[in-house]
Length: 113
Length: 120
Image (cartoon, rainbow over all chains, first blue to last red; front, top):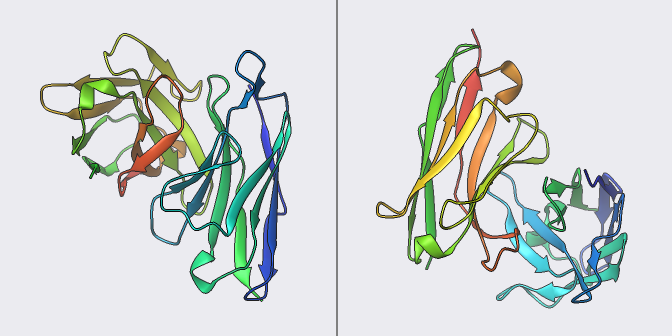
């Protein structure tokens, strides 16, 4: 099984500042035949289901604000919120879809400082 | 617009059974694999099961294999999860989620979830 490890567990960022969340996989999720990283990011606000933000490690889902960006390849990935807004308070999860079982990171809680 | 709505959750005793349903609308249901993902109270997300659009391919997490069975009715646009031999650690919100298609198992639409509580 591919283990997904997120860091930090939580972070507090001032409004308008940058938030950076890391996700590391226990083995590469880069599929060489198509050069795609099988990595997605989700946002879950309190009391709501998760919402897809990013897939293929860096492709933003339709309707997601461009302050959200994903980067990385292989085993190390980053979700960046370039200018934190109040509505971005949530828990963020990474997920690998390279292999079954599908696995999620433990989540990173983002709060306002 | 795609909508998913789970039902069937509730309180059940350890060792008991429960059947969850997920009604889908706004999509060609048979074209998409569907999954169940659960979240224990205050915890993270755990993938449970995935069923292909044609119901020919089925996948389970080891934690539920042999106890849970996923199925679908493509005429009723409904996904099911039959849960048997339930344990306290199965207590969670169960979400159904739609994959994006083409066999890539990440999820672009989720239902609001249904709570399953396993307790005596």
